[in-house]
Image (cartoon, rainbow, N blue to C red; front, side, top):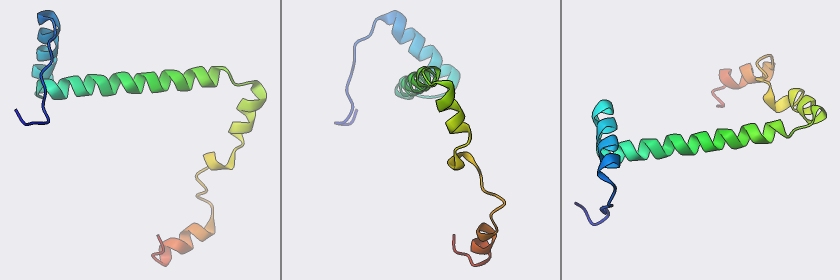
Length: 88
């Protein structure tokens, strides 16, 4: 164990669940825990995004649909010129 590592006490049942997941994913216990936390945090993020979007009025929704930042702007001839000049 390095000085940056620490131990935690968890019930055996939880330890067994973590261990089973780690075996299935062919990773360490720490990596299995980290992945589970990452997934949980991502789900929380998207739930917040959905809650925010549910609170938008129809007018706010329409304003986002016409927002220029949502377009890819592929028809812009200046983009092709940048590529030709290696200006990216």
